Length: 238
Image (cartoon, rainbow, N blue to C red; front, side):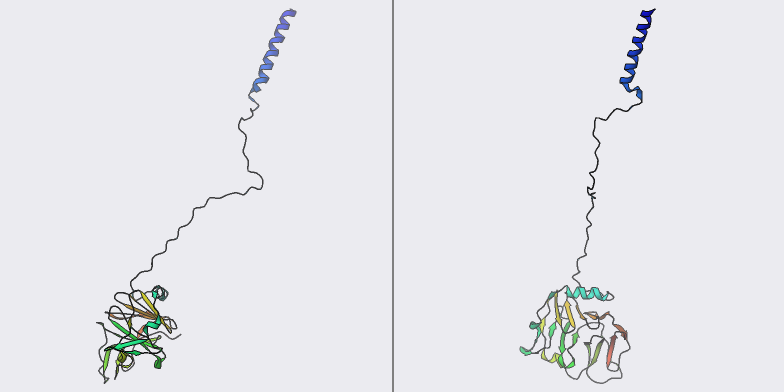
C-alpha cells in the first residue's frame, strides 16, 4: 500500500512540473523582437511634396481692346527697352532735323508715325493709315486730316483740322523695331508686327493703333466730340 501511494505522488509531482513549465496557457511568452520607441524629445519629420507654379509666357502680339490696363502695361514694359537718344531726329527728303527733347518714331508696320511736341507739354500725336477713320464734319471748314491722333493722356482726338503739318513737317523719326519699347515723359510705346500700343502712366490710359483704326485702352471711353474733332475718347472724371 505504501508503494502505490509513493508512485502516485511521484506521478502527480511530474504532472505539476510539466504544467508549470508550459505556462498553463495563461502567461505570455516574451517576444524575441525588441520593441522600437521614439527617443524623448526627438523631432517628428513630415514629408511634403513641393508645389510647382506655372507662369504663362507673355504674348508677343499686342493686347486687344478690353484687356485690363495692368496687363496692357505689363505687355508694353515687357518689350526690350529702346534708347531714347536714337529718336530725337526726324528726316525728310534726306534732310535731318534735331528735335531737341522731342521724340519722333515710326511703327514697323508703317501704319503709324508719331512725335511729341514740347510746346504742348510733350503730348504725343500720331498720323495713322487705317480703314475706320472719321470723315470731315459738315459744319467745319479747313484742311481735314482724318488720321491725325492726339493722345493727351486723359483724352484722345481722332481726326481734326490742321492748316500745316506741324510737328510732322520735319519728317519721320527712326523705326521703333518690333518688340522694342520706347519710354518718354509719361508715355511708353511698344510695337509688334501689325500694331502700336502706347500707354500714359499719369492717366492709366492707352491706345491701340493699327490698320483697323484706334482702339481705347484703360479708362478711355467714347464721348461726343467737340467742334472740329471727328471722334473723341475720354477718361471719366475722378
